[in-house]
Image (cartoon, rainbow, N blue to C red; front, side, top):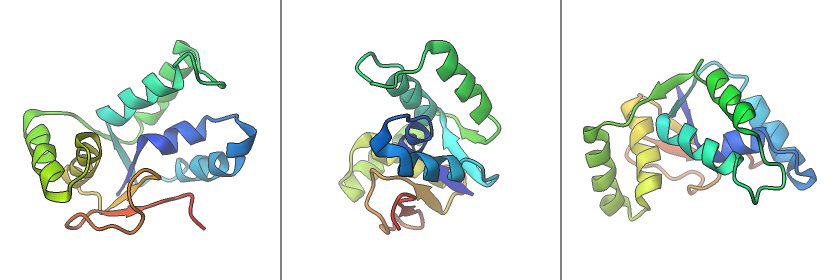
Length: 136
């Protein structure tokens, strides 16, 4: 399985002309059946997609409907052991807590790949490799 980071979901719903290429790539990614994400990713998506300063802001109903549709993927929950793993990863890899939660959520779900624009493309976090789906 491949783990999907929040930026992929946000690009998938983008109507900003300058993001058309990334939007198409993100939609193509979401057509796959081997994907996983986490509660954190769904929360981040909702907050960012509905924020008032976003030019292509989604309504509550639109964002909620999309989240419901993405529940077809495996969704990792947040629990104390995952928080502890992320805290350890933050220090070990020298990355933000939120990025460490993405890496450790992927690991907990058995994902060998994280699809993300935010983390370093090609970096291997002890068996979890980052791939930027927007790179040629």
